Length: 514
Image (cartoon, one colour):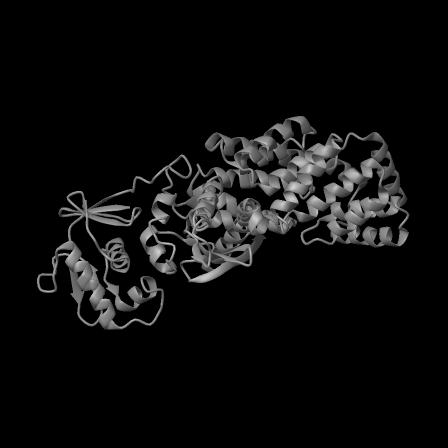
């Protein structure tokens, strides 16, 4: 946001104060204080609030706050006597009182090719330069090179607003005050870290901070030999995108759940819906559907919420959670189409469109949409998993295995991990390797979130491998998860074209009473 008052221009996006087009020198902390006062010009800001936001809750005296106020007044041409711009409310706080106009910031398109001004409620992140620690000057440039690559990768995520490097790199590599960054850039999350060299190795430590609470919600450390530095850069980007895809939505859902359903903005409802969506039960799928519907009721053009509805309808059809799976399959296609109408470049929209073609036994069409999803976001783990499933349906073993390996590499703790292992088990069954298939099927069925169809896969694989005791246990688990499960449900979910394996699986399911 950019504000104008008198001959002054305050640009929060570029973290700059200027007078008649010329920059005004002011210390970062004082400038953050000014931005906070201007952003909340319609009310008094208490000293405690300034301490909590600008000083990030650290112990700060009234004298230090007053000193920063004096710096601000000096920068804007005000003083403690006239108080034309900043008025002191004695004993309580301060208020910005100058008349002003404001316009949305013209955000740099450097990182994403489109304006980064986020819709209300969309999570935003600032990626800071890495702080060098004991690293040679010729490698210190990595402190900016790695964050630049991270920004480029994150900018492919349509659900996350990524603040351009032209803004975040204005903060020095020594900046550790995330509240200062959050105030200046209006960032909900800040990614910071250090890069250090020791004994011919390079290590990068990263921290993701929720600026509203000051809580570190994810941190990790990656180390590599000096001669493999290029591999480290790629590893960091892949590892980080996967982590953020998991931890930010979980944190957003936690916040939304604490606030309750009333008054949630569309993005909060969307993330709360995702939380329910990945539990893969009938009740949670219904709750996810309601969350996405609430989001669309507030914002009918919210593409991701329509894609979320496509996902819930897909689950209802795929898992036979409703009495009319055919109608659910039509809804999955219809909602995916609407999502694509609103944002054709969203990988999630393309993903849901591709999966809708599983339900109509059109894997070749599904493959095209899923390839588009992973092209739009090369770090899209679930897109590669879905591509592996599609290749499995047509019996393309190399493509299945390659996509599974990529998906697992990108997201080793993915909510669909049971599916990744399950597809590997199914393709092994199609190859006739029943022993290996049984091992992977059991691993899939024991993974959190696994549904009754995965239990049926474990049953069939163990039966074909001659592991009768294991098969009996998975028969009981299948009946527990879905008492009315049928062999037809399995083949509706896994409509593979390999005749031999289909006949073998069908015979084993009949032997087990399905």
